[in-house]
Length: 312
Image (cartoon, rainbow, N blue to C red; front, side, top):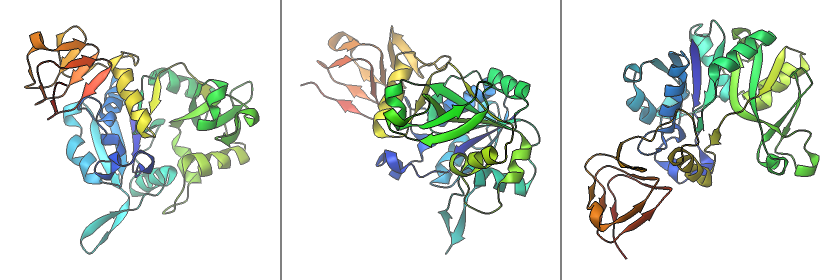
């Protein structure tokens, strides 16, 4: 089966981290967040993956390459131009990126799924696709129910009793929200939807394509599912993603590295005298890091690679 990972954004809300790395490459215990998504896709038999890239595209391509070491096939669609011999990123928007791929070659020839490259999820993709097909939908939004007090942080989706999408609200005030089901940025499409996207133009899934589907009365549905979802949109979300992995909140996502004692994980060549430090898990210590005698680490805590933690 085929999938697309959206990875072309600049990640302006999570700067300064994204000055030097694109959002999909943000490390969760030395492992890019996008790698967790690739593993999830492979687990659900999505083995052909297109990735649209733009900002710092080479960082993503150099790490994932053709996908062989991850058990999948990966190809890339660069959105930008060449100026004076340099690649200049110029993203086409989430929907515009899909159309660009299809214009090059009809890659999307059956039901396909689209994921944002900056979120940790444990969604049952197989069940979501099955529901989409059962409805005869041309497009399906995977939604999540949130606390009504939190709706102002998200795009709200309003559906009828059959799950058919009626309207949207972008980050409404709490007292004006028509629903507490939100758009998670996880989508299932039929190839026919691509015919509704103009070629070579900025076009967004949420703000352009979806309102068009509603206005045309297309079979467009939303399903609220129970799963863990951490969207790394801002710097505090990054910590929440790390914490979720350390605490085991996300199903089928294991802490990378080696478990040297219960709840304590390390990368390669960590310098620690375990008899002279106090460590209360869950804790991850990156490779080539030194923890000096007398240090106390209380989880959930992640320490990156090539660090030195001094006592006092």
